[in-house]
Length: 407
Ligand SMILES: Nc1ncnc2c1ncn2[C@@H]1O[C@H](COP(=O)(O)OP(=O)(O)O)[C@@H](O)[C@H]1O
Ligand SMILES: [Mg+2]
Image (cartoon, helix red, strand yellow):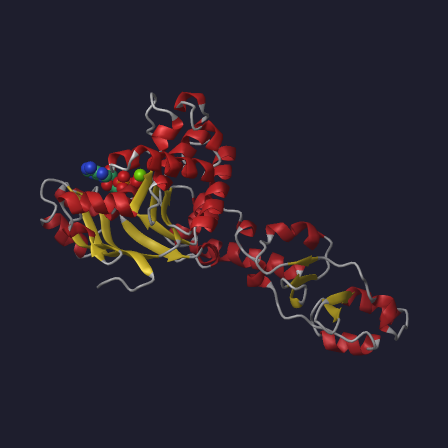
């Protein structure tokens, strides 16, 4: 198995056993599918990773999420060979990482990756700038060049004006940004971030997530991001890999994880997440009914079927009026036949990639919401009822799993 172009990191049936004889019976049992606790009871060896397979695409933010002890750090450390693996293969850019030794390994780590840890590990007696370009100094990059790159990285994380400060003069969040700048300074292809934000206060943490997303938008690095917090995983990840007891439980986009949890274990996690924050309008919207404003009330009622409203659009597909089923019903009740009196010019609109939460206020009005493309043309309708139904469906899915027995 080599690199398939789009994939920059590939884990191929990787096992990591801790103990005096990692390749002995513990590995045999793990390979036969025995779970971590049983392997440990039988052999006194710890299963760090068992049959882990995933690949990370170039430019992707790939999150590994799991409880403490699930094997996340072990997994990230196999990517730069801070850990040897017991079985399987790890490829980075087509290179078999396990086969690297000595200088080529050091070179590979320096050039390919930057690592950010939970604890900032800054040098207290070096300036912020010196900290941010420390890796480059080790690489032998001359002073002027490394300070230029260090400063650039500090500017990326919003700390350009603190270059001459010392770590102790910075808040925890700022120190962690220096950690990020240090990883970015050598412009590596891959960022490895192990619980990088986990020690920060929730508010600062969210700011850091936002900043990382903004930086990522600009730099398009490949990020392997580890967290034990599903909310964080869903917020920053293009895809999320959920691990339990050293094994991969599910890999999917945040929406897939939320709306199609693969097991009761995932569903249990998902329960605590505000789904409206992740599910996007495009998951729920349906095709719009459009009518001509010359239609009669009765014609429009017929066109509407069971939908809750129809839009009147111009020649470019831009909506300029809404008729709701409720307004049509009362127009019919009043015996009106012309549509004009039932048309509203005030209606809510949204985009397909906004989240359900972002549309709660509009949905509260209770009328269909126009989904518009960048040019303002109507591409669908978000029906407040369907929004609620989708949330209910996901809840139901989770309740269904609760009858399972999980361990
Ligand atoms: N050096 C080690 N020696 C023995 N066991 C280890 C070692 N490192 C990790 N483990 C074990 O491997 C499992 C996975 O650990 P880790 O990858 O650190 O989990 P996570 O980062 O998800 O909290 C745990 O059971 C842990 O105790
Ligand atoms: Mg860890």
